[in-house]
Amino acid sequence: MKQIAIGTCIPGIKALEWTTPLTDAGFECIAVNFHMTLSGIRLEELAPKVNALLEGKDAYVSSVGFYCNPLQYPDHAETLKYVIDNAHLFHTDMVTTFAGALEGKPVEESIPVFKKVFSELTRYAADKGVKIALENCPMEGSWNSPTCNIAFNPRAWEMMFNEVDADNLGLEWEPAHQMIQLIDPIAQLRKWAPKILHLHGKDASVDRTAVSEYGVFGAVEFAPERMPGFGDCNWRDIFSILHEKGYEGDLCVEGYHDPVYRGDWEMTAQLHALRYLTWCRGGDFTPNPWDK
Image (cartoon, rainbow, N blue to C red; front, side):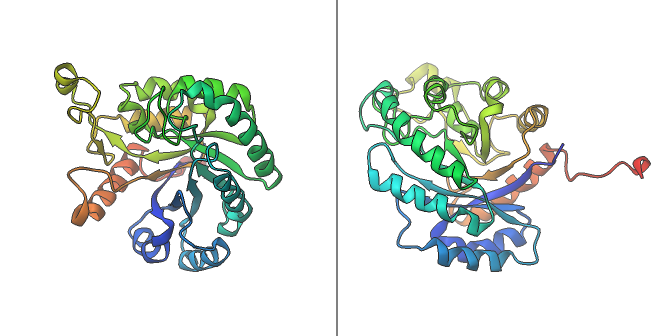
């Protein structure tokens, strides 16, 4: 059994500024992420600079993320191929993204397009030795009116993976994205762990009183996203289930969402999450002295 590394997500445009302070603080890996655009950054130029910052450290690049809508916009799919082409420059075989969506149309209508686009992308990635992990974020969409990602609900996962059955295609799972749908993340993890390729560490606090009084259609916020350690999720169970199911990847904290510990308190929250998750996983691996 391999210990699960704990890292943190870094915006690609901030990678050269934030990699050193975050890894010096103890994060064991980083996820370099871009949202909808690479902002003019050439990965061939960024990768060696990031690698130089990690030289001599145990920390590594866990994944390269390009969160986009490859079903709606062909140029997003082409950029995703570019990311797949260059992931190896960061010494990683993991690319993370959204499943995409036909914006505003029911999830079912996206499935044929998903099959076409991701059948090609998974074959392309497999030829490069790359895995594709689909994040489970709703992106403020719903089943009948998704925005840019249909991979937010297990019903969609069943449909997606039935159409594209590939070993190098799976989930980038995060409990908070399920909790805001009032889904039990622990029960879900027990079932879906075999399809999880990568994890984000973000929690949520579900206000059941707000749900009972105001419902779930936005009149009040009923499930604010939190840093691990400040939310409702049992991360000890998460680590135990992941180990039990044979997961040997890593978990990257996704910050910048906590409504309390944010802004000037972001680093405080990041380090709290790191210490808390390290404790939840059982600390650092220590060999049995009697096995020597």
